[in-house]
Image (cartoon, rainbow, N blue to C red; front, side, top):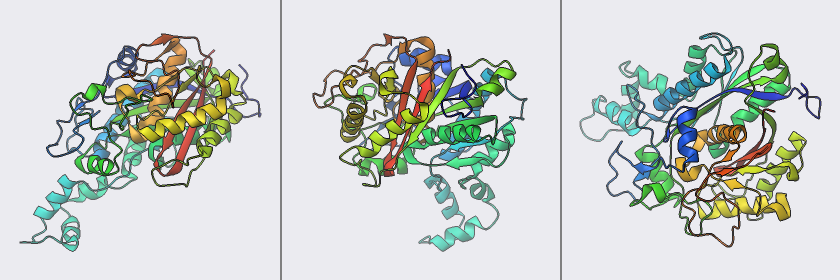
Length: 424
């Protein structure tokens, strides 16, 4: 492998990864569960769900934080995966990572637990106004809320703990955020701004308000009686996605830098593609052009043809429209091969980890190439004639793959594809 790619840019490799999902903590636990077809979806116990249309999720209940909130748990999950990734990479020193942090993070806002605490301390006897809450927040007794519920707080805390260089870059591009963070890290290395980058996607935003919002969009599955069977990507009877939590971290380096320090290479980030879709806040453009452009941009960036791709890690949310639109894109890009190229959706087992999905699924793609085993798409019992994919149904499949695509298509028209190559 040469140090530069087909355009003379530094080749970007992965030397360390870390992951946590509802299947468990760490790469080994997740890979074993994923390839055995285990589901991490379960009934929500974190908060009351009586009266809700959807009562299940892929919550991570085995990780505690002192005061539960989406940013606090997202930060803790990120800490776990960063620790695992840096340990595998054996880069830098404790608290001294030799590059910048690129972080995919969900929107941060005050949650009901904290709002009620402010209301209780507002001094109002009857109706609590917004001004009352502001006065309570400014009293000094709730400074921790102010510090926690700032979008930059998670990135700044992680940067301080792991000693990354420069200001952390936190981004939120809906369900494509993890892919966006990878792309930012790759571009920084290619431009020569750094030799290494820490890329993280984290999301722990399963709370009542978020669940209700997605439910009002009719985006969630309502198969509450059988949570483990609710996520059914590409099946004819799919009825919505499952909100889930998780985090993934990747240590990126230029190939020259990794070789110079004798690092073990996990895989190669060969190309990234992005294409915006301004058609609708939640729906994809009916002609699929942005999704098609996204995949083609990624292939062009990697210097590969569609015939060289041996596997697709699909966005595969299990919503009726998204799966159909992804098939529209795949069929346009891969032509006659579209129905025979293996495709699988990790979301059938871990649910939709939202902001973290792009990072987590890129790591699963790296593991797929490393182990020569394609994870299954479980719950595939009723094929959809309109979406004739080879979705590796229900059982993992051995296959030697050299190049793969990981797709991330988000609300608001955010689309990112990452092309990943085997280590050698």
